Image (tube, rainbow, N blue to C red; front, top):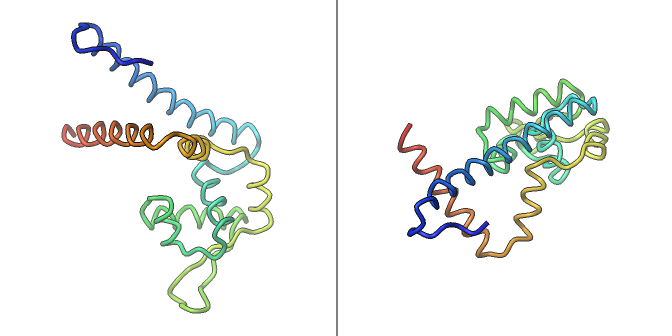
Length: 155
């Protein structure tokens, strides 16, 4: 979509409408993925699938490292790990080198979830952003930073 020019009176309204539409489409993709997981009989959420994929890539990852990779609070990461452990998808163990540190490993059931569940909206987003050029990614980051900054100022 080509953005309007300042001399066009309707450009502002059209651009705002398009931004809102795109945000709605992103939210719809997230909700559709959750519906897909439920319809497929998988008893996991999108973020839990993300945890399983990260643990698969980094077996023995600590809960704090998981939180950092997911950009979430450590207690949220611990909650995901505990729920996945109760479901039998991961094992949480003490790190033999540091008993204060908890590490996470996928079980066979967790590995089967990764193989069966299709990629989620975040994985697809990352995959497609990786294909974008540096200028496109910079424009996306700049635009999102602007929106978030101004949303925080008005809350």
